[in-house]
Amino acid sequence: MINKINRIITILFFIIAVVAVMFFLNGMTIHTIAENNIENHFLNAIAQKGITEGNITEEFNYSNSKTIFFENEKGEQAVATYIKSLYFNQWKQYYFLQLYAEQNKQYNDNDIVIDDHIFQYNMKYQLNEKGKLFVTPVEQIKPLLAIRLFGIGVVIVAAVIGRIVGIYMQRKR
Image 1 (tube, rainbow, N blue to C red):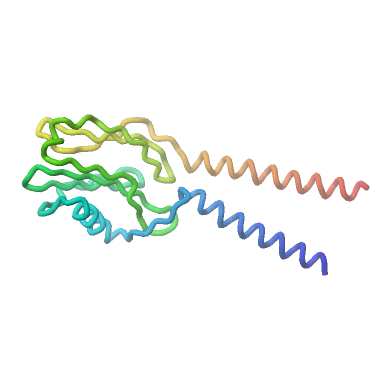
Image 2 (cartoon, rainbow, N blue to C red; image 1 turned 180 degrees about the vertical axis):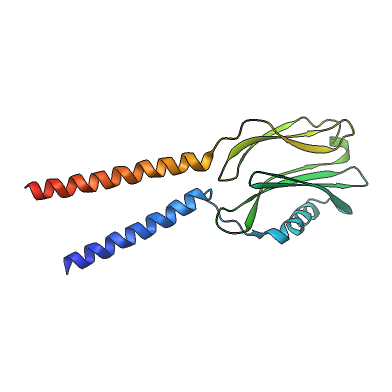
């Protein structure tokens, strides 16, 4: 009876550990926006900030992220970067920037670190000569998923070795 309880506890522990690792690899968040609703989500976020009557002007895809640009006739601009989940075709908003017409001349570059769960990289949000927002990747891509998987592998190996040593020490008595 005690062996069955120990096995059930061990199985439950491994299930919880697998779910926690999957959650960790996905950036510890839940992505709730379907890919076909990204533009609607972006336009709703802009409307809530008071910017209306404009169009999405451009879309920039890089790695596991999507950046969308918006502009209207008044010169108001907005940009948002969305990142994709590892497991499903779900997205979440990672970064949002809004500029009113008077801010376009005063705006200084923003350098944002994007962690899309697979890679980590810097994106520079800046204005071109015409005053239009654009984004460029700045740094070398860091293989974040590989680093996380290596760390998880080290923990698993340590746990297995610890379990083997524990069983060996128990039998030695």
